[in-house]
Length: 147
Image 1 (cartoon, helix red, strand yellow):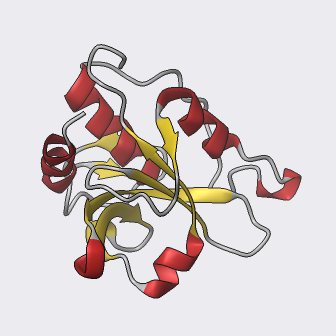
Image 2 (cartoon, rainbow, N blue to C red; image 1 turned 135 degrees about the horizontal axis):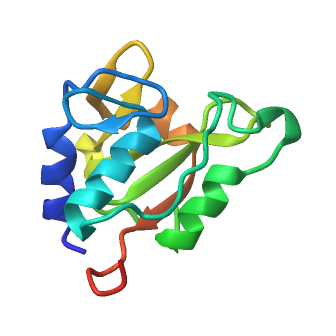
């Protein structure tokens, strides 16, 4: 999948308010809703059935639900093999489950990503050292015919 197309679609969502479990550009999205919306724009449908989920993402059970789900639809790649358009998965707390994601928009010294963040909505953020330390997985979108 073309990274420029992924980034352009993700940037359309900037300014969308944060709404848990929502996935509608301009109206509301959480981090998974942003990814679902970008997927719909690129492939023409949902990536799969998304069951209801709580903000804790099965954290008390230590279940990596989001990581498994991403691995079932996207192509896993080495964390350091960054490219524009990659989906990045974050662990927000040590020993917590990975439950936040974003779409990388720039690589290198000026690395950036787009994500939906509670209290901020969909924003483009510098992939600063504190964010980089939280990255646990990286994925590439599949080619159109695979999607």
